[in-house]
Length: 47
Image (cartoon, rainbow, N blue to C red; front, side, top):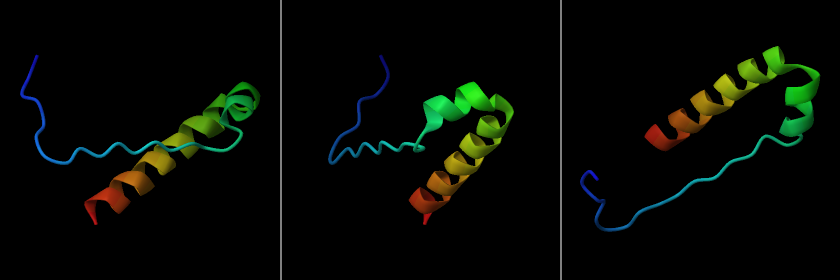
């Protein structure tokens, strides 16, 4: 196992509302939505 974090460790959980159904209905659109979601979260964390 690698180096363990020390100090305060923060976990962030997010959800795309209705994502299970959306994956079933339009997986291509969900891939785009998930990529956008991830970019928004990464940007918010970096700032």
